[in-house]
Amino acid sequence: MQAKQLRGVTKVTLTILSTVFTCFRVTLPASAQNFSDIRGHWGQVCIEQLAQRQIIKGYPDGTFKPNNVVNRAEFAVATNNAFPDATTVRNPVEFVDIPSNHWAAVKIKNSYQTGFISSYPGGLFRPREEITRSQALAGLASGLNYSPTKSATAILNSAFADANEIREFYREDIAAATEHNLVVIKPGSESFRTQRLNPNELVTRAELATFLCQALIEPSIVSQQYIAKTDRYEAISEKAESGSTKAELIYQKGGELEAGKPLAANIRLQVTRYGSTLLDRPVKALSTEQSRELNLVKLRTVRDLDGNGEPEIVVDLFAPNPQQNCCNISLIYDYQSERSRYTASEHSWFDGDYKIQDVDKNNVPEFHAINQVWEKLVGKDLTAAYPLLILQYRQGKLENVTREYPDSVYNDAYRLWREYQQAKASNKNFAPIFLYGYMANKYLLGQEEDGWERVRQVYQGEDKEQFITRIQDFLATNGYLEN
Figure 1 (cartoon, one colour):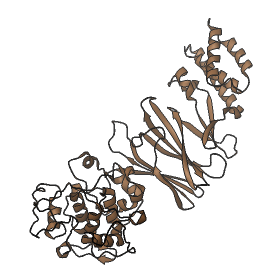
Figure 2 (figure 1 turned 135 degrees about the horizontal axis):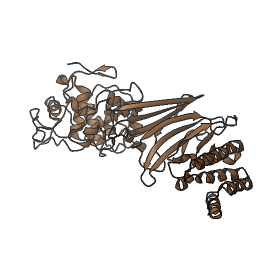
Figure 3 (figure 1 turned 135 degrees about the vertical axis):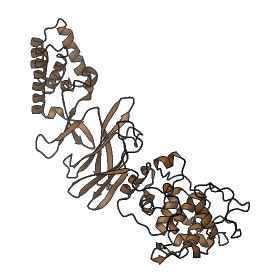
């Protein structure tokens, strides 16, 4: 049986670990190891071996109570008993809520000094506070001086269906614990089937025992099927950069999918500026809670959008919205120099898309898109009838600047006029729809009189005046008649 290395000190195997695991404050004879309530339990072998070596104890009634939760004092005692020779990394603290005669005072002090457990502000320890799976795993990784070998996000995304639910404070340590095979997931549950960490659930006595077995015993005596795999999911990484700003979009591909609709889940954006990480957080649409079930996601660009010399980061995603049957969304992350942080704004493209172009070559690009106000009039299948829409990122939001690009508007008016003529020549009953967009562009150019003259010449329907009125009403409603 091989020994594991703990912060430079070789840990002897369990067979000569004689320190009693008193974290449950019960003293029983060493022979009391066949607990009546763990027969057939998924952690039985681990629990019995730890008990046989007096690392853990049961209760006077012969039970182990594997589903009871563990508090901070018990965890501190457990780690100190399991790793008595761990190196001290902190100065001692006199906790105001741990009197000298507290049953676990010495063990708490030692566990804190060796890095297995932390404290609270004001000199508090909170010994009776129950501990979560995140806290237990992170504490073990910290005390054992484990570090992840690659990006914590990449590790967690490749392992857990609920990777984004792990709090920032614990991510590095839990990634390291996962790489070292400390994470055990109890079988027979949805969490086991999908490999969910459930980071905020309270850790049970059985779970803590298996974590300790994984840290102490080689080869593992915990069934391999219960140990979290680091390749459970495919983790995708997209990178882009501009100058000193680098962005990485990491997400999970796979998981529980609808047929033909692969979902991107556990999406995170990491942004570094001059080598310092200023952003590392989940990506989700600001207008929806559906942050884990996105059909599409893409790191679109890292580029200065507003000409202030500081690049913005654009992330595109599709966030299902049952009410609107859409939506394609762009999240634009903008650096706020006064606070040295990034803030995000959202723009919905509905079912459309866009292109980023710098038409006037002034190093301030524009977003060229489809104007979705036309959907109710034209429908989704005739987007060629939609007039031009040009947006620009200004003061933290996208503004409609179409009027500022008369050459582009003129070309689009010409395109719509040609589309109308071709449709009319083919006797298409939808041909008049193109005249709506044509007149929208003529108003943007300030050439509405010329436009109406042309429309009156080509439209020969008996409802000519009513048709013109309908166009005018639509354009007025959607702001095209405003100067």
